[in-house]
Length: 115
Length: 112
Image (cartoon, rainbow over all chains, first blue to last red; front, top):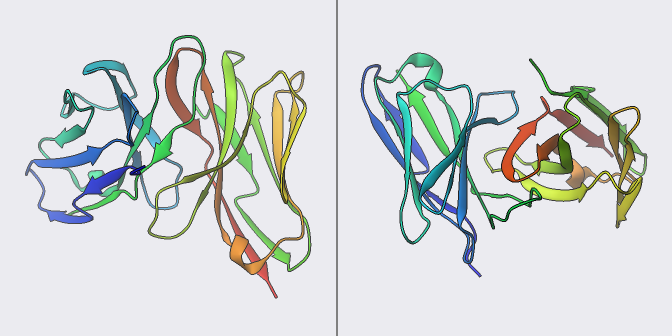
C-alpha cells in the first residue's frame, strides 16, 4: 500500500508568481484535503476535494484553488504569491463516507518559500 | 477564533516520566478527536484517536482521556522516551465533512 506522496519537496518562488503543488493520495482513498502550516503553528485547512468536487473550504482567498483528478490525485494552485504564503503545504487523504469523520493520512509536505 | 485550544505549548519531561497535553474544544458538532505526532521536516502522523462515546482509549504507552461534558480531552504518554520528542497536535473534526481543526501544538522534549 502506497502512502500519500507530494511533489516537489521544496520550492522557492518570488512574490507575484504562481505555483502548483501536487499530491497523490493513498491507495483506496477518494478524498484529499490541503492544509497550510506556518512555522510554529498547527496546520490550517485550505479546502477538501471529494470525488473531484470541492467539499468545503477554509478561510483562504480565491487565489488558492485546487483540482482533483479521476485517479483522486490533486493539485493546489496559488496565484499572485505573497510573502505570507511561505509555509509547509500538507496534503492529506482519507476514505470519504457520509455520516462520520474519518482518519486522514498526511503526506510529507511541500516547503514553499516566497522571496 | 481558535476552536481547539491546546496547552502547554512546550513541555520538558525526564525519561520515564509522564507527559500530559491538554486540549479543549468549543464546537459540540465535533465527533472525532485525533492526536498527531510530527517530527521536524515531516508531515503529521496519526497517533491515536477517540470518539465522544468513550471516555478513555489506550494504545501502548499512549492514552487519551475524554470529558464530553467539559469539552476537554488530553493525551498521556507513559514512560516517556527521548524518541517521543516531537510536536504533538490535538485535533477535532465533525460529521460528514472531514475538515480537521488543529490545536497550536505542543513541542515535547524528553531528556535522558
